[in-house]
Image (cartoon, rainbow, N blue to C red; front, side):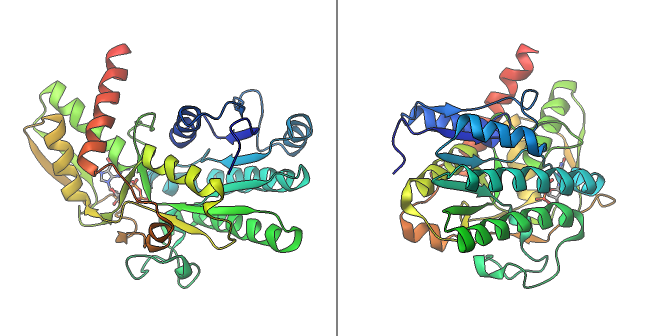
Length: 313
Ligand code: GDP
């Protein structure tokens, strides 16, 4: 168990998952959290990160996503994604070892699995086939992070675990139409269309790809569960909701929640990405963890948060 006054560093606390991790750790009673803005500490900079670890000496490290995005971000910015992620994770994993961090949690992504991976995707399917080209650069960086944690565990006897999240959504997500993932993107599109009384909303791709979505508070709850000594293995572990929906079904749910009355248009010139992405979560289920928030409830909470942010603008 992490003690309540353990010094915990949350890298990437400014993103959706990092914000939720801090929230969840605080409400669980952890009172010695370290967060530092990216404007004060550039995590891609080796000497800055080295200095930071020498000064702070954290006991636990959560490596939340810092540079990532939806299907268009992956298509348009592969160089930035691979460079920044490789730099940040190399610095954090290496200096965590040097600072004798007790346990580190590295976050992968479900896009690391092969494009035509049998569903649901088991942890051992990693590197059994070619990846989906739209997210290959990001996926390769994430795979390198997982392998790096395993190498450090093997050579230095560290306790660095890798968690593979399914598609996560919730408050503080990125709602920018060009760089977001599908849920925040569609929430904004449907909300705008309703407000402007548009007749149509454009959905990218065919609507056929299937995705699994997990509400962010459930996910961070799983991360803390795993860090609290429920999991100490080098092999990565999947965290998901357990069920998937098609993008069309998702769009219809968001249409209902936002109260939009018009029609859906599918834009086939935009990529579908992976045909299916459902994680096999039997491993974490066996440890005694499962998700609590169903998609409808999670979408409603996310939409309520989004409307409030728009109102305050
Ligand atoms: P992925 O899970 O890595 O493919 O990333 P996304 O969450 O960005 O996209 C999931 C699926 O939703 C893809 O098939 C997209 O083409 C589709 N999609 C439909 N409309 C949108 C949209 O407005 N934004 C995004 N990001 N994806 C969309």
